[in-house]
Length: 497
Image (tube, rainbow, N blue to C red):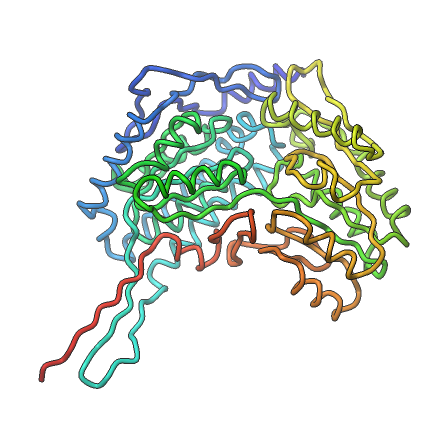
């Protein structure tokens, strides 16, 4: 079966929505403009998405504001709100096969990933925050005997969310689930490269009982719809996941408008550090490979800087390279495929341009570095490893967002920590060692929001996720995420009798 045949068959199993979802209904952009939705699997068109702009954002924000002020969701009893969100999670489970197909068609990641991880984790996130609704309490302050002080959390109001294309629905759920749990109304601007699952999910939310106007989805270009959402004077908070460059723009738009609250989860250039006393070379080699090659390297926490102690570097890199050479890009719709496509042609070309920069700056290409499966019409890059990388090189400092490992040697612990922290980013880091003292020293020394010891990417919905430095601020996941969507209010009551 050709890739084109595979795409044609998959399209028969999905409901592709292309309009904006505003106030409980799909509708085209006010301008009538559209943009092509291209599957990276074979480069064919899936449909024409509404290319929304500021006028559509105005409509969506107005719907969100009206729903918030009427209070159909905000004032709903906690347990009733919980029941709606649990029904929402069940809708995700009931339609998981369709959502997984949509995600793979739209973004090019392997169906095995969307089926086993992405979509089930969305339902998990919704359930987690649903269960938190009637279990997170406000506070009483330590007041004098003639007063009562209450510290209460109130919903922020209208929340804008600009979400990325690499985990289109999962990253969105990390925003909308806690935002809804705290009683907000929300307007989501999905990435123009991958909007389909969020649009379909909005429809499922309505079927589950979410009131009209509470969850709105407005597809469009970032420079039009995204910018308008971040600048909007009636949006109370803006949350974002994406590149650091765009995160800086979002922060600026918030300052230019109404000082709306901002939370940013931005880029990374994460170091995975393998010490000579690594307890399990096989596990570490697998983590080194899959820490970058999972989702074709299109992961903000990708371990793209592989720091290996010089005493073991040659042997260790041979293990990682053997994994990479056996890993062949394939049809993302084939359940056996573990390495799929880049999200679009532009991202594929960006990755290949970084490969050229690595070569030009003197790094040694061990494997990969070329476009793969060119005859498919899709956008694929072979798993790539560079050795002999200096941490000052472009490929060691800039986020490539593709399947490219930059291997860097180090002499001792202090050298590893210095190199590991020598980046503008601080999203994730990891260390492999048998020495618990060394592990704890590393965990405390590395300037990153997530530090893993003898594993990579260990986490779940109960642990906070976010970064230091130019990787942003604010946290997704865990109960800490609820803080982003609430305002603290102090109520002081003085007793007169």
